Structures are given as C-alpha cells and as structure tokens.
Image 1 (cartoon, rainbow, N blue to C red):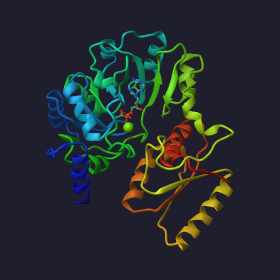
Image 2 (image 1 turned 90 degrees about the vertical axis):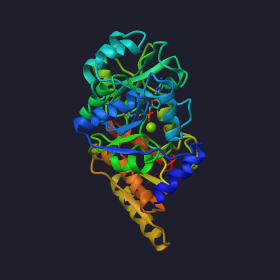
Image 3 (image 1 turned 180 degrees about the vertical axis):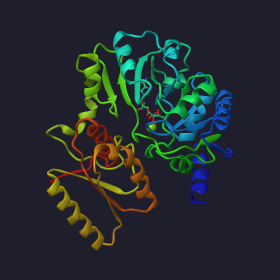
Image 4 (image 1 turned 135 degrees about the vertical axis):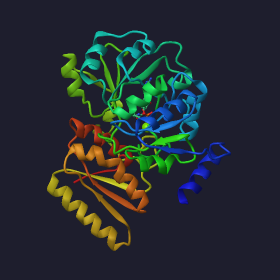
Length: 347
Ligand code: TXA
Ligand code: MG
C-alpha cells in the first residue's frame, strides 16, 4: 500500500496522471517474447542483467525513450546506455571501431563493460542526452540477450530504480520502485555482480574510465598494453584538503534515507570504532545498521540490497567499514562513498 501511494505521489510529481498497468513476467522464453513485443511497440520493460536490473525501451524510438525519463524521474540530459546482443550491431551505432575498442570487446564482451563511442547520427538525441557520443553495452545475462533479440532493436536501459535510489539487484527492488510506472517487469534471479558496468570513454587518445566496475582499470590496461586513465572526479575524495561533504550535495547519488558513515583505517581500529558508535547510538535510542563485507565480490553483490534494507527497516544510521580501494574494492567504494555523501571517518 505504501509503495502504491508513493508511486501515485511520484507520478503526480512528474506529471503522470494515470497509473500504468504493470505486467509481471517470468524469465521463460514465451514471456521474454512478450516482453520483446512490448519494447518493439514502444513500451517499457524492466529486465535483469549481470550487473543490475535495467529499464529498457527501443533505443531508436524517441517517444519510447522519453518514457524512461518519466518513469525514473530522471533529468533528461542524463544519457542512456544502449544494449546490444551481438557485436555486429555496434557498427550500426558507432561512427568508427578503433583497434583499442576491438581489443576490449574481444576480452570483455559480452559482459559488464560499457564503451562510450562517437555515435551514428540516427540515434535520437533523447537517448544520448544530446551528446555526440553514445554508451554501448553487450550484456552477458542470457535473459537480457534473449530480450534484446526478441525486441529486434538496440535497447536503451538505465538502471531500473527511481532516480536517487540504489540500483536494483533483485526483481523485488524493481517492483518496489516501478510498479505502475512501466509496462512489464521480468522477474529473474539476483544480479550476478550487483554494481553497474564499468563505463570507459573510448573517444580520446587514451581511454578513460568514467565509472569503475567489475572490469577494473588493471584488467583493461593489461588487455590494451597501456595504462587507461581514471576520470579525475573518481578520486575527488583523496586530496589533502578533503572535507567531508554534507548530505544532499550533488555527489550523493545512491542515497539511503539513513545517515551513513564509513569508517576507514586499520581493521581492528575500524571494528572498535564501529562498535563504540553502535553502542552510543543505540543507547541514544537510534536504529543502527552495521555493514561489513567478507570480501569485495560479496560487497559488490550485497551493497545496494543492504542500503534498500536499511530504508525498509527505518534505520537511522548506517555504520560501514571501508574496503581497500583497489581493484573491485575501488569500484564498490565509489558507490559507498556516494551513498554516504563522502562522510568518511578516519580512525
Ligand atoms: O550495468 C549497467 O551499466 C546498467 C545495466 C542496466 O546495463 N545500466 C546503468 O545505466 O547503470 P545508468 O543509466 O544507470 O548509468 C549509465 C551511466 C550514467 O552515469 C551516464 O551518465 C553514463 O553511463 N553515460 C551514458 N552514456 C554516456 C555518454 N555518451 N557519455 C558519458 N557518459 C555516459
Ligand atoms: Mg543508474
């Protein structure tokens, strides 16, 4: 009931008068065919990928893509990733395919890697946020691949969450955010990785990672035989003059309702600091959730689900232990830092 009320509230906020009837589909082939038809006819379908659930529409249909922005409550200058189900389709979307792109594709597609490339002019501006580039991804999830094939078109898909919420890693997360806002939701299992794809800009002389993911800069550098760059914004926190940023600032993208603190330092000290804070907050009558992960793979898989759980449990404060910021740990910390509004406590 709460969700329905919230959806109606959101719909009104974004100027949608009527609730859409959302069909729940399974990941069986007959249902995937139905979902493909919905996309072909200009509708919206939420579907699983190996990273997070996506909210798909025909990438070449202006009206269909516009509906995605409305459903998510997302600013319309934020570009979409276009999903394909075979390497050949890239030629119809990209202006050129460079040797560096070919190497990365050979190594990591299908998989959790999005290439930003110069785009062909026939892709609508609404899909690319008006940019002269487009993000392309060939997902490895078999349901995603079957859906794209059934649709018979490239599928524009951001993560299937309401704007500002963590990306959905289960069908239940999608249903919480998107019931009444999309035409269909394909229910499938948990997403294998749990964080969004690595986004790498291939338009410059040296490829640059814009969003870190499961495919790390080290993995890419190795395949390319030269170092890739990291968008300097990704290391914004590391400067000497770092100041914790207050909640609600533009960097806070994956925001739980609770205040979130990240404890960083030697493991024993972090453990002690979290325990002390937990005791103090509980004594103060606050609902506290402690987030610790046994390794980076589990952290990637579980982080967004835990943030959503915290909201459902009406948690006041989340206390999280920092991960070592290398490899996959760097990618997960990128999300954790944003969730926490860069609220880091060094111990
Ligand atoms: O794993 C994923 O990438 C998931 C699944 C569904 O495939 N999709 C996803 O989409 O995370 P979204 O829209 O939530 O995030 C796409 C990111 C955004 O930060 C967007 O700004 C960036 O990619 N992006 C897309 N096209 C771009 C472009 N042409 N230039 C620069 N950044 C771009
Ligand atoms: Mg997203």
